[in-house]
Length: 371
Image (tube, rainbow, N blue to C red; front, top):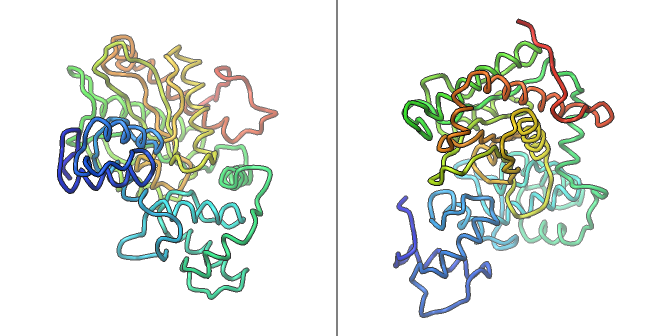
């Protein structure tokens, strides 16, 4: 699709403005109905910030998808699982959150009406005596509004994921983890002279894969050294493996050479405040890397990027420094530094499975590996 930006006019700009007005981010001014002006760009940036999108004031594919989803409120339409084109929207995310609060496993509230949402809806209908059709229509909607919350004392999705984590035990042996080196193939990612993002993260992924294998973890890579599948293909691959966790590896760049540091990302839609195991892992990864390398802490953030939104297991994306920063670039080019980061990632994964009473201080834990 063509990017929509400040200065554009016409039906597409009017459509964007209409959604922002509906969401209360813009005043309804009929005289500006077809214009994407500075006021509209400011409102769009606010929307992007709230939805875990890249805040650039441009309507690209991800922002367009989020704007389209934001049109819908629960009750605006009948919801069901469509095999040809899944129903997506804020109304689906609210339905999923409501089912989770009532104790039904609708999966992560990602706004996509899939198999787990349908199963949870069937279970809800069965227990409330509603016609079993897996469809959220008027009768189901009334029952959802009438019932009080069953899950108390915590956040439903975090509690469910934490329970699964607990049952799988503290040992890494037998776990399955997908490692996603970003970009690849015809897409080198960010580039600085001969140093490319794709090559850096591929080498880091290979080092992490080796360390995981040495402690009995089955590690799957989403791509080879010269391939570059799409984000959707990577997510589908990860889901097909039935993995316990996913770690996606990237580096960043910025027009300002002073920009530097490490950041981690987990799924967060901005529609609720549900913690997830992915959020916890993102925090562990960030703290271990900062402690072991001294890099600038750029914090953890909730995002709705496809690798985080479409994967069914807890997932984290690591942005390891800036190729445009002289300090970060020197580290990224150093194989010894990548070894330290691979160890930090391995330790973070192990710490995720440990009980809090046996969790050693950040930066002190070591995991012996063979070879």
